[in-house]
Amino acid sequence: MVVNLSSEQITLRQPDDWHVHLRDGEILESIVGYTARVFRRAIIMPNLIPPIKSVGAAIKYRQRILDAIPSGLPFTPLMTAYLTDDFSPDVLKKGHQTGVFTAAKLYPANSTTNSSNGVSDISSIGSLFETMEEIGMPLLIHGEVTDSDVDIFDREEVFIDRHLEPILNRFPSLRVVLEHITTKQAVQFVENNSSTLAATITPHHLHINRNAMFDGGIRSDFYCLPVAKREQHRLALRRAATSGRKCFFLGTDSAPHLRNFKENSCGCAGIFNAPYALESYVEVFEQEAALDQLEAFTSENGPSFYGLPLNEGSVTLIKRTQVVPEAFNLKGKTDSYSSITPFHAGESLKWSILLKENNRRA
Ligand code: NCD
Ligand code: ZN
Image (tube, rainbow, N blue to C red; front, side, top):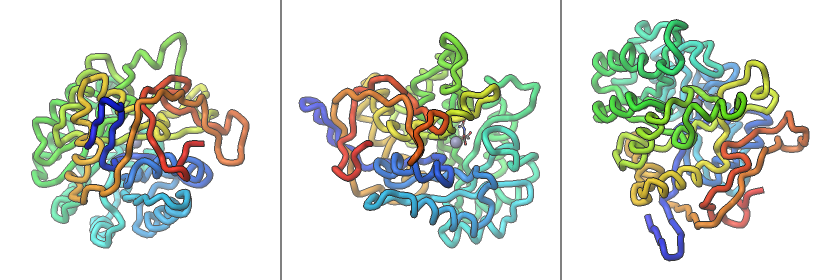
């Protein structure tokens, strides 16, 4: 990484996004470019309706993503399998060995958006974990319990005790990513188990704590799962992300929902951060005086965990203030209910990405 502070410019090895929701259809077509013009590869979440449960469905979805990418942007979607109670170990094995499934995603049933087909009893899918351990396929976990008697702010911590620790003990070589961590307990647990366990950290969990959801009224734009926690947890996440430790890496969890599904008496969980994700992370690293650790987090620790080569290309950022738009419209639509509100809407960000002419922001 070249940090030229005198000209206030940073050149980074091109990053990857190790957790993103690209959706499908007109949303996919409207948003995939925001990810593809900055990130070289991304782990694509499988929680579509219906979810991606077969090798064939993943191949078709990957093709729809590739077809939707604006021309000239090299971008590799890395597909994931959506685990269910009856998922077959043979399908996982075939999907991984033919290079279609990079990893498999465990959603505890009803833990988050489009997870109703997820796993209802984690202890019953041991044969899947065993297969993954054997073939070296990473397990990606949405780490929250769903028991109604567990407070929503405690669900990650309880998941670690009840499920994650037993999984790691029973399958000591299984490589696991605890996705979008939100608590100091998760930070500590990952650090203590970093030989096989890693975690992604989102930009929003580095910027906001739970107060953002209730600032002057109910603000669904800051509602995502796992839900943002108290300030002490946000600070622990900032320390983890900027520590340079190999077990922490970039995963935006960019999760777009149309305005009418967010502005609703039962608004959807998910924050759309793809258009300014890298700038958002850079701001955090600068505030923490840790720009020297930025490239490890954005561009090195992820590939190293997944056993993939580092990217060859680079991305340059300059210190130039930009104001984030209030909304992004779907292609060809102008009504506000067909728009998506981005993270940092209406705010100024201090860094801007220098993009090639044909990738310029709209
Ligand atoms: C995600 C979505 O909308 O698909 N929502 C979210 O709040 N993060 C699902 C997920 O990753 O939990
Ligand atoms: Zn997600």
